[in-house]
Image 1 (tube, rainbow, N blue to C red):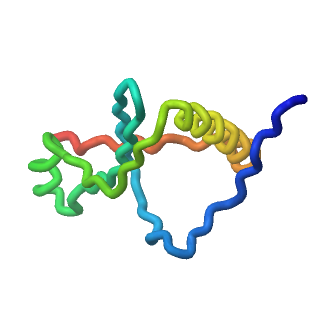
Image 2: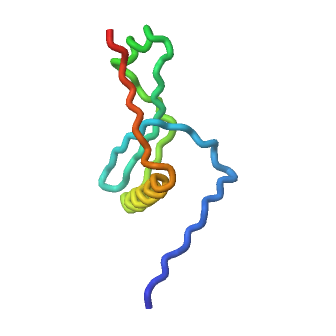
Image 3: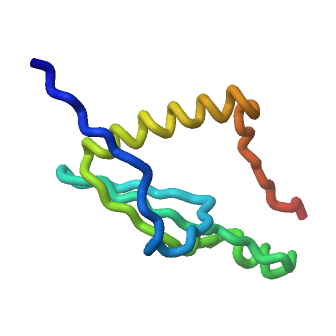
Length: 103
């Protein structure tokens, strides 16, 4: 008899914290798990401060997720599937490249 996979429903978000915005992700791993660190990279609006900061812009960490490698494979498949569906509906996302001002 073939084993049935358990059905997993949507998460209960009643006690979850507010969502956070991140525009940078870093990944590190051990033989046991993966750590995904989500960060927010902000640039100063003032051009003088931007020139001082652009050499050493450091993202501000907003969330970390640690998960076993098996779950990462499932996450990668889920993200590929959802990104394809998104692209089919809205078009492929275009990366926004920002260049510093030339002196």
